[in-house]
Length: 235
Image (cartoon, rainbow, N blue to C red):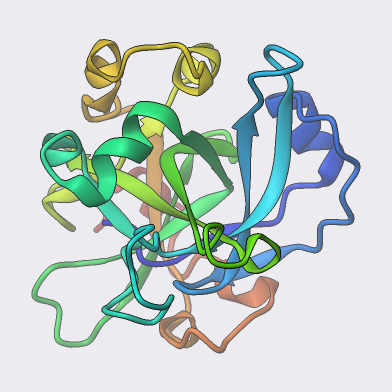
């Protein structure tokens, strides 16, 4: 699952990695929560291959929803059923995106104490989660259209399975173009949903203040305990 994440990389770092055209004024985000707007990377059909960064609402809203608050926010979409569920199938086929992050929050299943953990790359570099996006409201009022997104999840890899049986789909940089390509057939992309290799990621406990969606600040991402926590050896 992915219910909270951070994005503190600089605009220059993100542009080098994702190649978008805009020059946004991005502020560090230490605790992005569902229903908040967050940056995602999309690709235009024209000019062909041009990538764009925009702020979308986290929690996909189906085009036929009566309003954006009808039902719980669809922050995650299961990779195994993307083509089976009407809410996600059209977006998976035609509206894919990259969700940039420096790390996502994780809680251990069954942990009554709700100790939060931060999952990052082992080199702490920003990376991308596979996402899909949808547009709501354009038929009734184009000016009030809302673009929203979901993060795709798969079975957890062996390293993260002790924490949760699901994890977001982490894309390798060499697959970004393939995922964003609007002409790619959805069926040809399902191999990207395999759990990420065990040596890609690391995990560490972070302050319990991160449990609150209202909390913010760099102190939320400071690992607690020994440095071995980053490898999972002491968890």
